Image 1: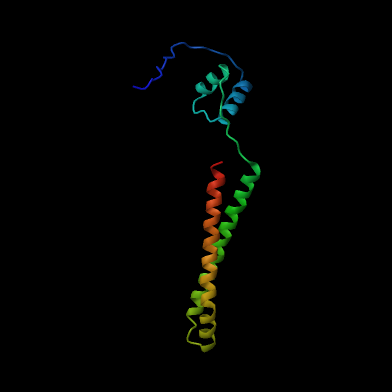
Image 2 (image 1 turned 180 degrees about the vertical axis):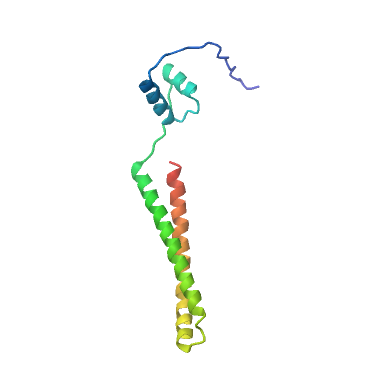
Length: 132
């Protein structure tokens, strides 16, 4: 059998008084930590145990915001391009347009594939950075 650590019951209450400013600072520091409960956070601090702190990279956050905007713009460009091509397909009775449509059909497919590839890569980068 494995040696299981016996959980000690915490039955002693320790009270501490703080003013409003101190309480706000304690709450702010707690929110920056990985601790779910304020009591666990305070216990670790009081017992001088390590506390994991969340770290946010400000420049990475700014890049992520820009990527979200770029993704929206790519979606809009793709949608506009699709709408334009659909309207041109209605004009395929005119010989000049039939030739143009045939010539640019592959360009549309390539543009949409590249746009989709960029969006997928942006999603991958976003997922990687948002986990840090």
